Image (cartoon, rainbow, N blue to C red; front, side):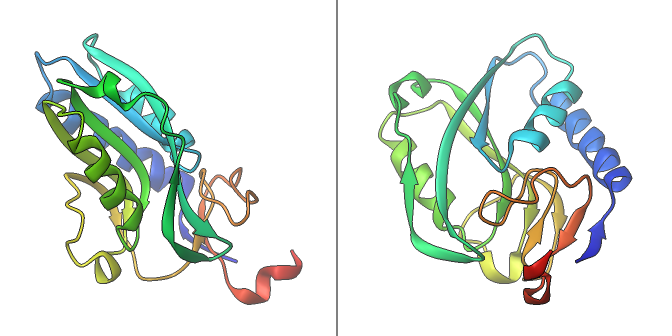
Length: 174
């Protein structure tokens, strides 16, 4: 593996995003909605950077990957989406790749009529997403490479790496 983004670069960008979100949501109640599991570390760090007492924390699990490939379908721990009715939602995602996962979730959310929905993603592969999902707050635009670390995984492994690493097929024996 080779390092794409260091822990220090991640920390700096998360602080910048936190400052921007704090300013944009000044005086508003909103729900900070972390997409599990990949966004957990990013979400926790970003949540601490938001300087507001009007923010609620919530989580939901969505998944569309098996190994390094998108399955093309999304599974969701539906829970009770009704709780988002009339809420200002800030969806916190680790990576917007094909847009499949978020497109599915946004359609499901429409059924419960949130007040507003914005998306904050640490990464976007714009060349793959091609505008299917609009990211309102973006950490980094990256090339179409498979990355791990800082919560992002390959079959539940590598989440604990502090940096963002590019996973290559030759890394299988690590």
